[in-house]
Image (cartoon, rainbow, N blue to C red):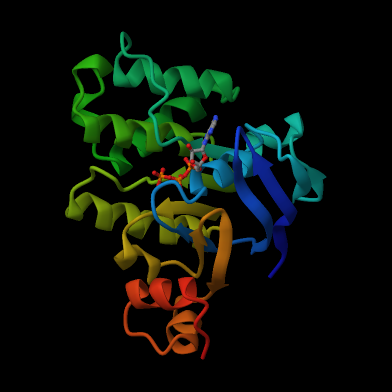
Length: 240
Ligand SMILES: Nc1ncnc2c1ncn2[C@@H]1O[C@H](COP(=O)(O)OP(=O)(O)OP(=O)(O)O)[C@@H](O)[C@H]1O
């Protein structure tokens, strides 16, 4: 497998240190989950990888280009935790706006809007103004905007929060298809159940990656049956 994202010794401080010496390699065509408690630094790491923030030290390379690099933008889809949507516009108009931002041709744009809206089960609500959407609908629309332009890399910050189990299952099915299609997916989650579905997971605690590997390898390494147990044992510095 080819390495698509290389993170070299990244640290980030705001008024206090948030990330410490993160090293990570992400292979193309995989789903990589970042799991950790609130405030552990997952969003900050996603924003650094997406090129929305600069590290205080260290470097990130995507497709052999150092982040941030404008030429990477068409290759990255980012779904923020806080929805970045136009409330006065309809769902359709929001999606249309993003297709224009990504310079999609008219025919392609319409078929991608159909695809993305269907995937997140919003087809029937596209004419409504986003200000009248529920929280879960806004999350779903945000997810749709991130994947409209078929990016090589999808960075999803808590994509399944506020989404019901049935739709969550269909989003996972679609993410598996995207992966089979060669797309690389990075996602943060608090939900330990989702960890098992990722190809690789990184456990984030206090701004460091305390353990990383396939779900099976981590369960075996920490003699654990659940990812909660893995997290607790890894956090205590426990080893097999
Ligand atoms: N722009 C910022 N300015 C100052 N501090 C920040 C900023 N962004 C994040 N932080 C701080 O960095 C730390 C990590 O926050 P971050 O949002 O990355 O955590 P998280 O793991 O994504 O949490 P959650 O799961 O709740 O989203 C927190 O202490 C937060 O207050």
